[in-house]
Image (cartoon, rainbow, N blue to C red; front, side):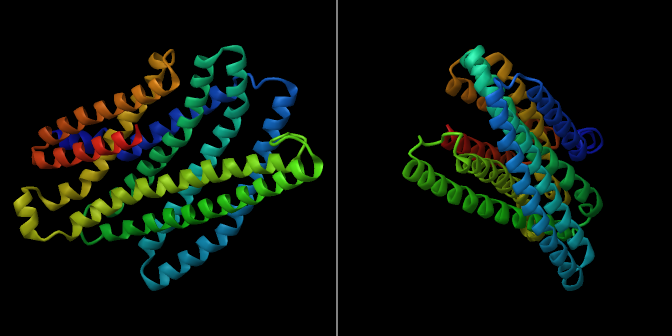
Length: 341
């Protein structure tokens, strides 16, 4: 019964779309907040414009790469894998764009909130601006993988096609991370040499055009690049787990006490639970924003993690799965949380 509930109602694409809608709603909330003085708004606009220009140029070049790989995979492997590849690449690009738009809008608004509302207001704006990237990553991942699982994930012989999705994500993450990192370091060193050494103006002075370029690079590398990197890890973990399930021996499945198709779809079910927990965790900042920033961030993380544990336990018990699966998930979550804290 619970299996049908997850399959028919809480499907991955549905939760993915919901996560994206929440991310878009948060973006508009951030965009409607005051962004300070005219000078602050001007600097914000310059950074936003520069970041978008960089991404347009980078993605324009990557479009040729994606097209070439798509053709090669179609001819050398098969068309379904090529379709999965291009789907992973496009959704990775979208995750970076959405995160970049929210972050460049949130910078000046966080500063203005700190000036007028204090620490609590600044924490609220900055947290929700950053959550757009996280929800976009999870939402696009669930949407893309959910559709591919619906098409290719019903049989062991076709689920291999989904591996191309991870390849597409990895390709964009590689170029976005490296390209953004190179750009920001070049701009940082250049602005320091020209500004502090030649012109004698303070570091990070907005009169130095190199400082704007440096801030553009910081956003490109740490948001679009990092977002694509996280997106690749998120989708890759789901696909890798399904690949292990698809290649397990019958003896291993018998010892585990679970059928292959259930084990294949379990990573996606856990991702759906993760999205539900994340949405509630993001919303919990409303109750914790009066605390110290580090305490509030820790509280939202623990709230989402605790809910994830409870929902995972309910899933394992409801689907009559071996408890060793729950203990594996719990141990990984605890270790990851402790490292993050």
